[in-house]
Image (cartoon, rainbow, N blue to C red; front, side, top):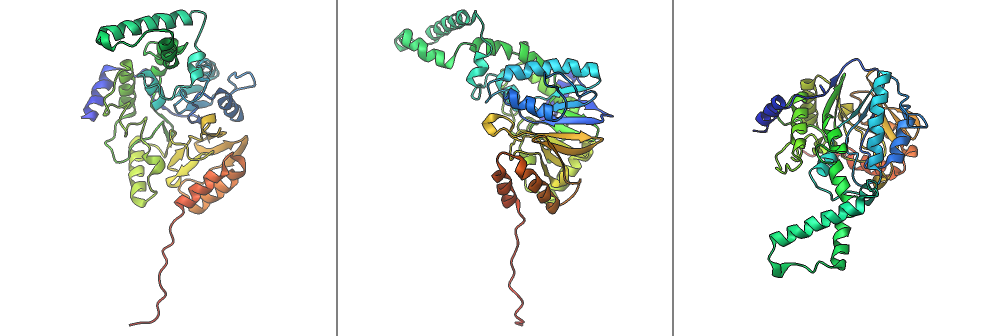
Length: 380
């Protein structure tokens, strides 16, 4: 059923961006930002795409930010405004900035504000914010009175207002306006893709379920943008909400690296005509993590302060991936290589990450189990 819906939406909403690029010599990839402007700037400078004044210096580089700009951190507005500016500067230089849609963009747009940082509201205030808050409060009180019996009304006094204002602080109304489908941030998000192919690499925030029915890149992107027009969409089976949607799916980050799962992933990659898929959404350690012999690359390094401020970017030059980690370049294991090469790479990364114990825990958890057998004692 969802496949039919995707096709219909693709026909109804013509994608403004094709979601596919070819002949790109250099790609820089950064995972979840979550409002940490300073660390995001640091990583972009490490990768050579911006200068000390945060101006584009990447030339024809394509910068791919794989979603989740808002929530958890204080400076989402600064992050978005910088990316909007870099988009124009990169285009003039022959490069391109791709800000993909993540699950947190859709959460904020549809009013799920559980993870909004207080400063995300405060950053949008101005001299009229108190007046806007007061008007919103009056509308709220009016709504309560119209929808509840008078005997159930609270006492709308100063103490009640103080309690109410903690949930709807200064900047709340400005935040909701900015993230509306036609707002400054919301309209900008809707211009972008959820899935992107550049040469032989596919990029998507959460991932694609390799066992699910395949959908074209254009159909997925059109469907996501169509649902974001109505930020009230709440159906758990919709493409922006479903657990197996490209924005939420975590299977590629956590499923066992068995031969059967590898075969499923290879079939999915073949369908899209790519060699690998790069995902974010699931921070496991402070560096890029290859899985399934490099067929899957995890780019969420926990960049934001909330997750430990990982400082790493994936770089794909002439279709060969490497990592810039804390300002140093590391080669990723060769495509299709095994466990020993992965361990060598992670050993080189350990001194450069803030939480090396995460690498140790990952290696211990994923280390192949040795099956002990009793020696043959010659018994017949």
